[in-house]
Length: 441
Image: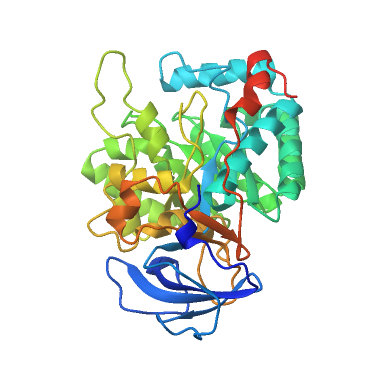
């Protein structure tokens, strides 16, 4: 339940006083920071942030909520998800928790059940959850082999329009690059992506064919003005170096669009010199990297009767230190690739801090689910706190990082255009019939 002590006044113009803000997410206001946190008063007027002032700077007659140093964040950006796979676990689980087990389970479920009605119901359930948690931007990968590419992109297009006032949605076509050999399919896929305003994605494997496949991918993207978002090196095999191959292809083709690489797990399994050379090349090519810490920790280095030896994640700190744009995201939720999750960026952030050791200090950590993520998705106008920006904010009772990271923040208050939203999460029972008989109702 929302915390009654941090509920804003029901007024067109009011003040959130004595707020603690992550400085990295704030524009146009500077103050003395402690671990990247600053104190301020926020004046909200007609759904917009009118002003950011020092504590006590708001007019005394203004209606206000005293947050008593509670944190205020901008709404979140979750830029690598799989809404089309979400919530199929009860219908099609992963028998052994491995990556291959997940591939096979999703393939079976997709072939048996992924009608437009089924995909729509599960995607909308996920969107409702994300919205309640405080998310305002989501990028989803959509399985895009024929004929699923037309089904899922049509559903996505409908939901993007229906949710446009709540969550900005983007979609990436996810397919194996060797499927480009089927020209009729690939041409139709590009038509769908272009018509629906999506991105071109893909999964690739090391081999002699990879450079040619990447050249065709980048040339096609250039011809059609498409950005690219790829699944990369999602393995513990140190010989998998598709990230380096992608960087080389970007430079070789002089590709001018945005290229995002998700996962990049094997980078952390390579020797120091190999990893350094790859990171330097990635920086030169201007790639962006998204880490998916919860899913990567779940899948990577999973072998029967054996404790995992590593955390599954990429070299996040080294990539960021090289000037490469980085962020974290949810990835899968309640499907064979990740049995858990609820598209809650607070959970993602908390686990990323722990898994990736993004603490000590935490000064800039908030950027990875807010400003950095939004900018990487081409929406720098979102996930920020600035005068003139929409009052899309998440209010917490937590005052310090230790308080914020020690509890799930279930009592948070979410404001959209300065108004509290209903924070009741959808009930899993709504999905029961669809998951039991494979049909959405």
